[in-house]
Length: 143
Image (cartoon, rainbow, N blue to C red):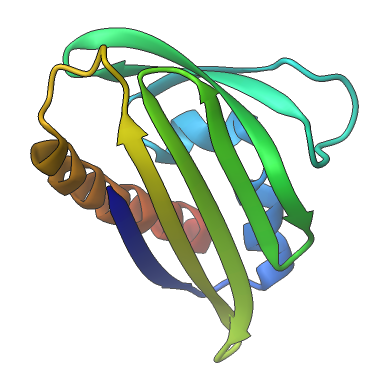
């Protein structure tokens, strides 16, 4: 399963990066995420972990994520280390027409506990990414 999404946001890359790389902000722009908690102390860094709790296929599920790349304000990458879907997502931010071009690329595979066939899950993930990144854009441009 793979998705790619690009969004142009009328905010500087540093602002977008700061918001995007803070796990506590996930429930504000990712539908389904109801809670996050940091599992690592200190500032966000490569190797830092956090847990997200979301509703998925009608169930409440937890996933632990790990930061794999952190190059402010250009690159922020994560991988799911435990949870129903094994996924990596790489966010690349670059200046664009006075704002930011954000490109997200995700790849992953459903685990055995996912009750949705792979092709249906891939379509759902792509649709959700479009919706979530549009929400991120609206939120950041409104502030």
